[in-house]
Every structure is written in C-alpha cells, then in structure tokens.
Image 1: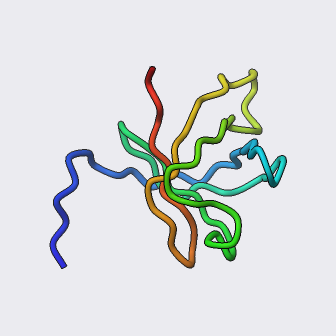
Image 2 (image 1 turned 90 degrees about the vertical axis):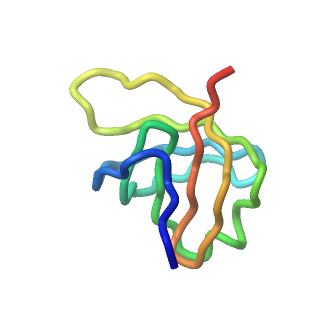
Length: 88
C-alpha cells in the first residue's frame, strides 16, 4: 500500500484530553502528529467515535495550560483514531 500523505508524521507520545458530546472526557495517548492532525491510541475506538464527529482536545502534563483545539475524526481503526485539526 502506498503512502500519499501531504504532511510528514512525527512520533509523539503525550496525554491528550478529549471532550466528546456523548462519552464525556477521555484521556488518551497520542502516537504521532503532523501539521494537519494527530493519531490517538484508543481501545475499541469504533465503539466510541465515528468519522465526521467533532471533539475538543487539550494536551495534558505541560508546564503551562495548553490551548483547547477543535478536532474532527477522519479515520477510525481498531488501534485508535486519526483526528484532523479544525481551523475555522
């Protein structure tokens, strides 16, 4: 399978707090990040998130409070989900 990604992924392991309208707060771990989004590890993601849903996310554990970003689910896999940064 070829990889036609426009943005390079950088491995990054941080805690990410996700706010979901139905499931509430989820604390997840990222796998990688790019200019356009982030991949988060999530057991049974297909039971929790659907493509097209929007969530808010905030990196946890930094020395200062990180901004809260809007994210859209663009990929759901058994290991986790791909989230695109929403830039309105």
